[in-house]
Every structure is written in structure tokens, then in C-alpha cells.
Length: 215
Image (cartoon, rainbow, N blue to C red):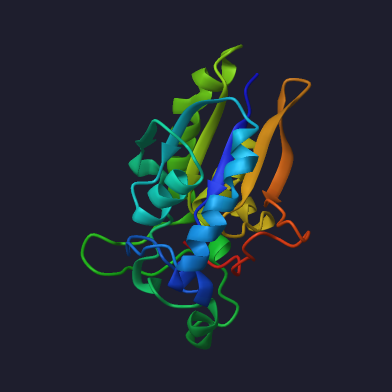
């Protein structure tokens, strides 16, 4: 059975600063581009059958720099709609909502077209993606399936793939420009690798890591 490979995009200015980023379409920083390119050797080791990416620039550019080909966009891979918390850090939110935690509490409504999403709504999107890729994963010789997207969405998708509720995405910290792998053990989904990066020649992480952040 093929593996599900999860790629979070490289660093942006807002991910670097811990600002929640969903629909705001930011480019990668120079560091983010180097991070994305550093994924190339990790993905080159894999036999890739299908690639789906969020339509946001930061995800598509990461896929390109990582050497992925035949990339198709999927709007369901967009980041959690943060509503009124777009561009705001967790520390700023907690000044008025002490103890606020995204995976439990969700967000407040934002501008027109961005009402925000609850954990359950993000989980429903993740379930749709997983249903679409299920036949590819089940194919005996179809190759791995790569999803290039965003931190909080991929964390929720991981929880759902493992049979956990959307809120359990809180258990899976995900840094920028990392590769994670979900496969199977005895026919059941199992986490095989998480937050992997390619080492630099001197043994350090190739481009450093931005905070886990959001977006």
C-alpha cells in the first residue's frame, strides 16, 4: 500500500512571526525557498504517484522547489479559515481570551467571505481529501500520494487519517518545510515519520526551522 506524504510549505513572514495565515496569500521568504528546496532529496527517494496542493502561492512554490511534478490544486487543502484572527498571534488573542486554544475553541467571524471554521468543519474538509486519495493509496503500484499544504490543516488531516477527532491535531506539531509520512501497520493507518528535514552537509538542519506557527 502506498504512503501518504505530507509537506508543509516553507517559511513566510507571517509563519516566521507566528501570525495566523489562512487566505492571505503570502510568498515564501528567502529562507522559506531554501527550506523548500532542501526537501528535494527527501522526496527524490520516493516513488510519487499523485500530488495535490493547496492553491495558495506558498504551497505551490514549495511544491515546485521541492521538485514535485504534475501538481494539481485542491481547494479543500487550504488552511483553516481563521476568521477574525487572520494575521494575529496566539499571544495577542489570549490577551482578550485567556486560555484560548485553536483546536478546542475555534475562531471568531472575520470579514465577508471568511466566517471562520470550527475544528469539526476543518475535519470535514480533511475527510473529503482523504476520501479522494483513498483509491490512490489502495492501489498496489500507484506510488505515494503527496499533499502540500498548511500546518493546522495537515495536523487535523493527520488526526482524521489516524481515526482521531479533529481536535487531536493539537498533538502533532508541524514545522515549516517538513516531510511527514503516514503508512500502515497490520492494515491500519500508522505514523511512520514526522517533521523530517534534510540535514545540511555540516549535520545541521539545512535551512533552519521557523516556529510551528500557523498557516
